[in-house]
Image (cartoon, rainbow over all chains, first blue to last red; front, top):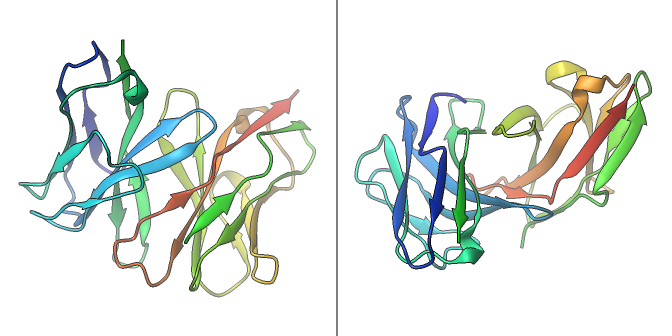
Amino acid sequence: NAGVTQTPKFRVLKTGQSMTLLCAQDMNHEYMYWYRQDPGMGLRLIHYSVGEGTTAKGEVPDGYNVSRLKKQNFLLGLESAAPSQTSVYFCAITRLAGTDTQYFGPGTRLTVL
Amino acid sequence: AQSVAQPEDQVNVAEGNPLTVKCTYSVSGNPYLFWYVQYPNRGLQFLLKYITGDNLVKGSYGFEAEFNKSQTSFHLKKPSALVSDSALYFCAVRDEEDSSYKLIFGSGTRLLVRP
């Protein structure tokens, strides 16, 4: 997983609860991403960051917030969880220096009841 | 706008036979193309990519992909399938000019290799 870890691995929430997913990387990469994976829809980009202190919206940002206060960590927040946010969430980094390839963390499976 | 299409939800092939998983793309500029594989309850693993140069790209586990600019396709191939190749495969594209390196993914194709 190219040094990308995600916490937690599983979580069950009730509608309206909040939580934060943590993505951590140990290789000093600038570019980090949050995706969600849903059956038949592939991976869709939620938010991304091109460096410490910067974030930007992806394809499906509504209902999520992110922060990148430290270069190593990219946090994804759900302020008021909804059943439609039941999904598997993946964090990724882009490794530059000639390879220009995204590498993914192991994922977080979130269920919202 | 960028997009990726994987027209087959599932591909079935017998072990030892060649396999092809199809992918077509749309970008405004030059494409960078990727294939990833996902095994059950795992993250995505990088297989191969095309950036420039030879249209036939070789990757991990004996997979290869052929870039066809006129048909805007990047099909994944393997000469002889293994049961262990059974997994979910994703094609992805990004525009060469996109400085954020964002990827757009297809919906995925499930490959089932029967013994």
